Amino acid sequence: MKQQTVIGNRIIGADQPPFVIAEMSGNHNQSLDRALAIVDAAAAAGAHALKLQTYTADTMTIDLDEGAFHIGDPNSLWQGTSLYKLYQEAHTPWEWHAPIFARCRERGLICFSTPFDETAVEFLETLNVPCYKIASFENTDLPLIRKVAATGKPMIISTGMATVAELDETVRVAREAGCPGLILLKCTSTYPATPANTNIRTIPHLRELFGCEAGLSDHTMGTGVAVAAVALGATVIEKHFTLRRADGGVDAAFSLEPEELQSLVVETERAWQALGGISYGPTEGEKPSLAYRRSLYVIKDMKAGEEFTRDNVRAIRPGYGLPPKFIYILLGKSVQKDIQRGTPVSFDLF
Image 1: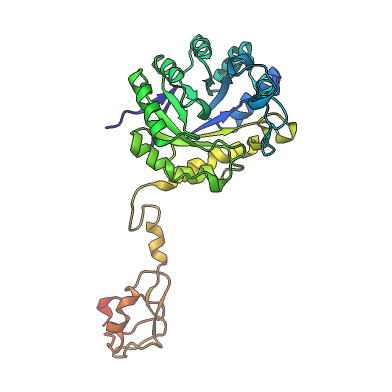
Image 2: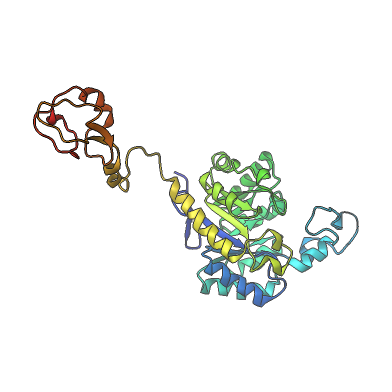
């Protein structure tokens, strides 16, 4: 039997409601007060976890604004700046981590982070994180995968851009290096992503292929894709989260607002509840409704010896008479006694 993955006080699996992660990323807009307000809003919306990103501009890249270090793609949300300046704007100062983790504990949220290099892993270990997340762009960084797996904590890995061969290598390395529980998140690494480019049918395939839990790291707008993913078996849903998109910020354009996050939590749990099992026949809840099926009733007063005809018997509601299929046997038969209009038809009447 597949081992369960446990993160903090939550069991992750098909027999549990989806684990909903609110991703803060750079939506704090370089304000610790705003970061703490995001924690409060995520908790109030019913999220189960809050995730940070742990890096500095210098651990991500070098300070150069030319060539490949300049973001020139006209379709990018961050077109016109450099990688270094983007990460300066988006990073969560490391000294903020402890107060953010403390606020999460106060609000009942599981807090963890995405490390982007080995120094971030070492720092996060001092905060006793319950698990680690590997971002799509780092899912082929095998030295980082080994470093994280060696902590003995569960790992959540986004699969964006990775081929099956690359994922196979990543999963093997993680498990060989000591990862006790692995969750793969289907991810499309465009910001925002379109539903048509999300391919959530991959989720059950990931679970089967790699023998682990699978979910969705969702960059689409709204909640529809995430709800559909749960219907396909996703056990983890991760979404970027902000207080208000109108406030701006590096990830604001594709982040949920509090009311939307609350809807995501409610609707993904409803989708999970609706999965149930393979079932035919009335459920316990449906059994009272059987009384309102159609059945055969006498619709005119009848005298003893009178025959059943289309004029005096009909299939109507409620359902206490014989099923409608017996009408053909009934027609032409004589009744044994007087019958009042509204009597359910039974075999002892003829």
